Image 1 (cartoon, protein in one colour):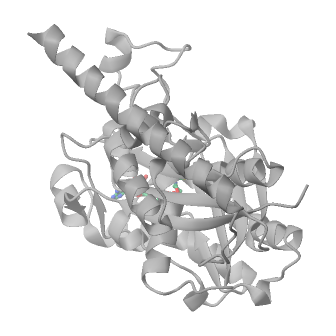
Image 2: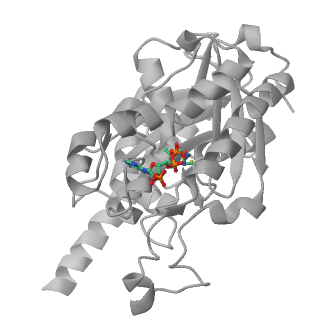
Length: 372
Ligand SMILES: CC(C)(COP(=O)(O)OP(=O)(O)OC[C@H]1O[C@@H](n2cnc3c(N)ncnc32)[C@H](O)[C@@H]1OP(=O)(O)O)[C@@H](O)C(=O)NCCC(=O)NCCS
């Protein structure tokens, strides 16, 4: 069997329109623009509107990524949504994305690895593609953290924002794409950043709601120390696994949590600031969405060119950390199966798209009938 390499062939992002500035926050809690900027580097963040959810943001980002890849949803055979704010506890948000896109040929599941979720998803998808059983995967990082934020807690509410980012990965014999990934976890730090209630330990009750236990809780200083230690180590490790070195790195895309964490990590690695991407000032920490949104904007701004070496590195609740080394390789050299295979593949995709359309129409008609 020939070796398959997973390449990023499409990228997309979606952020809510509503902007919440530091000055707005200073009207809500005892804080100031100056405190937030100097301690975190954040200037503003996006907050989901009433009709926006993790699913709607995921769908917008996914559609943009598919369009840029020049693929229709029926080409997907795998969908992974990394999130800590899923649409529901179950079914998986990925299944709702599958239905919303009409990606009828795709397996779908969610993945929870805190703010490292997107890197975890990328790693799993790239390995499944390299294994040969999957060919075209959609990996989404999406969050509506505003729904689990305690807007009275100044230590956390200034940090987070909402958004989604997505990539389409495709297998090819061409070398490049996701060169290597490393993933790590230390569950002994699980208490440092968590959502206490709503699971089997503390099911939702009047008490849990009254005590605010459905809001995110964090011990910021400890998380800070952990991040500063793990980001440089993970970056070095993934480059080593990819057979590359720091000098060859063209762009580092770190998880956008705090500018001081990013600076401290990159200073340790001696990476010049122009090789580090940051959009934290505009979006705050969007957890699983932060790296794919940043990657998408880096490409849109021309900061990533063909053959560039990019490292995405993240850390987060769990505790977890992870990094991916990517040789940017779009456009991919064409890989054309024989004409007969192409014809039947196209027929299969069209049939699947038609079947999905008919199913959704029927479901819509039936639900209208029930309501009447
Ligand atoms: C949260 C974080 C910005 C706090 O910065 P810090 O320098 O560690 O600040 P501290 O928590 O030590 O608090 C210092 C003081 O500022 C106060 N403070 C906290 N939040 C504040 C705010 N929004 N505005 C004004 N003052 C604030 C604290 O109450 C404390 O006051 P005190 O000294 O009178 O007790 C920082 O710890 C951090 O970024 N941690 C990592 C968080 C993170 O990235 N989480 C996501 C992981 S994926």
